[in-house]
Image (cartoon, rainbow, N blue to C red; front, side, top):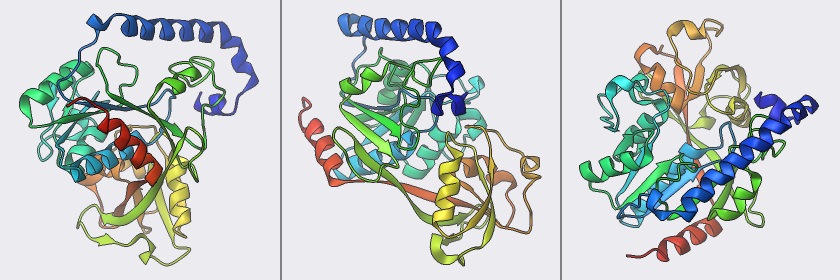
Length: 328
């Protein structure tokens, strides 16, 4: 369906009545929370929601990691809440991630990645207010970042950051099931900041975000190399289980490598047999999110590409302006 949505396939018009109904229900639901504050739980600290209105990857996790680093540079103590997509209910909700103990199949790949990489407290729970309360009760934080959750209106928020994919945009700009939107496109006008992942430069009302490769990390040894250290034109196997795998493969091509790409579903679970189609004689490069799930059976020539989000001064200024306007 993703391909049809983003290529505006004509047959999708057959689903328009359902799409119109979905949009109406989504709008009515949001309005219900806006008109009745008693339905909304507000945390005693600022809450920043990073979300999207489209299905498919938009770069929410890199944005959250950037936010964590930025807030820490201001002397703040951020914590993160997440649904924990793919988490095993056996761990129980809410659950404060133990980064050195928990496994991706138990708590979800993206929350574990954030907890390990940023060393900040991360709580998973599909109930966002419950996650926020648990975080505040069990960690010393003074600002909460909600990784996803734009549509979870029971959690009050002080700043909304809406993520887009520059290559895909809004697709055919229709709500589910005719299109990829979780809410009508007019929702963009109501958020605080709109960020487009892969946009070359800021435009009116939209800030550009680029994902910059920083280093290649060996899954077994931990060896770290500059991405440009391998010779140009080197053939590599590449796997990506993210919302937009082609973006990762294009990044490798931008490093002058020749990737043989293997796309997997977002949040895919792997075994060593998952990569049977890969040539074992060639280096295998994966995303950091995939590496979290493959470290236990990695081979000597398996690497992940570490990527950092890059945002311009205009975004930093706009974000800071909103943070300065929050009550103490």
